[in-house]
Image (cartoon, rainbow, N blue to C red):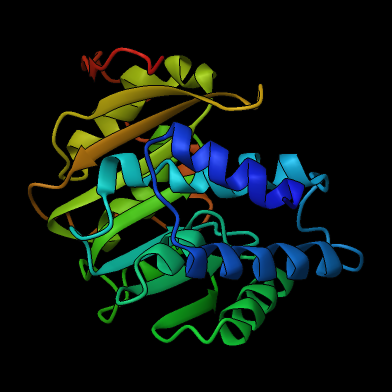
Length: 255
């Protein structure tokens, strides 16, 4: 069996996710296009098959532990890069609409090319900033799910993502173990932006690929219209940074 496919199947299985053959074929095409394009565009520093399978694809699939595949019909991926996790989630939920957002035009062009090659409908890859698009009428509070993978601190990522989410929808932050340094400020920012008390879920990726922490918060109300703030401000002056602590519930790590 191809090493990429083997690692992809085994990694997904360890998360309790069953991959249909049709999805595996699409992921194989996606991987080939990623490595080919990476020769000319800086999309990833990970180029070995096991690494790509686990650190990109399986890592992206881990969102489904929180969001499932049937509970959302629209997703926005802020800072999608080469399409992780947003395009992977779209492949797993083909009926959903996916907005894939990045500030780097070449990455957006790559994501569009992959979506076209895979015959995916309902994919919009946009070159722009979340601070601008989060205020646009056509996008604000229109999504069931907003995700961000290693883009920024929890505080900044919440300000980028939550304006896109409809009340009742979910915000998922994909972070590493150092997220503990961001807990208090991030939780307070989520509260300011209309989210419920967030929860953390720890997991360990297979093949020694490291620990991941998924933060999830349900949106309960609309944020003030002034959010998101102007481009660049959320990262420089994160919400909640000087506020009092706001405790988060935490699940036990996956074994």
